[in-house]
Length: 85
Image (cartoon, rainbow, N blue to C red; front, side, top):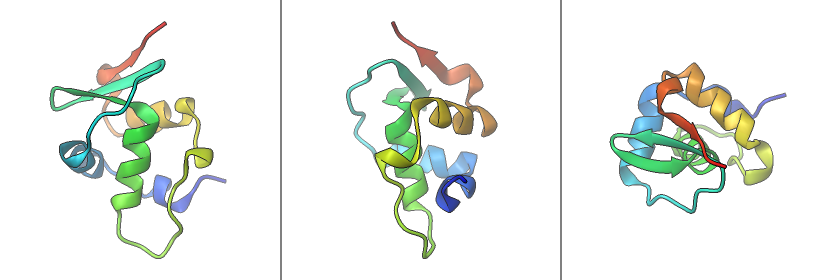
C-alpha cells in the first residue's frame, strides 16, 4: 500500500517543492521542473514531506524511482521526465 503522503501529492505541491529544493545527484531518472533538473525520488519525497498532515515522513525506502516517475506522470510531468543511461 502506498504511503498516504504520496497519495496526497498534487501538481502544485511538486512545483512548490522544486522552488525551494537544491537538486541532488542524478543517477538514472530525472525530472525538469521550472527549468531545474532533479532526481525523481528526491523531488517526490520532498514534495510529499512538505504536505501538512499527521502521517509519518516519506523515506527513501517508501518509493522506488519507478514509483516516483509514476507519481510525476500522474500529476502532469510526463514530458519532463528523463531517463539517462
